[in-house]
Length: 241
Image (cartoon, rainbow, N blue to C red; front, top):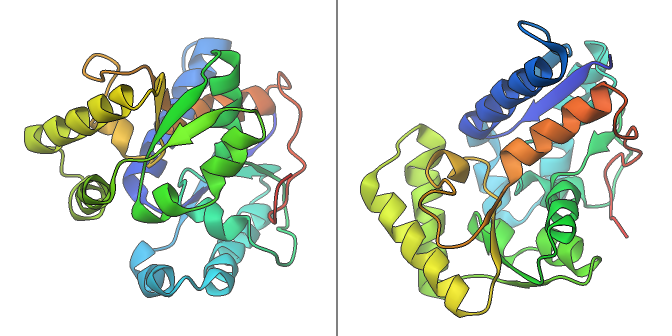
């Protein structure tokens, strides 16, 4: 089995990814058995200002240091359970020291397999306004939509003021359900939960649309790679496509 590295950025989503990877291991291998997993998690607060400035070079360098830690620990590939981080990971720069499984590609692959034609994107303001999902979905001929500006602010505020801090409320859930319902009215046939904390708030039982759970999809794909059921990734950061 290959050694999985988790390059964390937001701890709630990374924790869900770690837990899911272990559970997927049990599903494949039996009780108490899973691939080896090592996680590194530098504090997000250190680079929030860089996110606001759009300083992808600084962000990429920040993630490079954690990737080096994972490589030094013997990891053979990495996953980053943070969709927004992939904006910086996709930016040009020195190749990462180990290959990575790209979360946007995993989600878009699942959308294509399910026959989705237009996917709503829910995530941070950076992700909803950014290039990662229009790119990943567009390469597969899948349309996409984001909430309007007022709703994007609601989604983003809840992520940073609540979800990333482990706060999950009924009022936040109700707001997200309302926004997903509007995406449904806009012609979306699925919603991508592409902040890795959103699946802790929104489940299929409450969503007006079928969900694409980026966190659990990434973890399941990582275990498939570790067990040789999916090819080793070749991407080491930088633009895709």
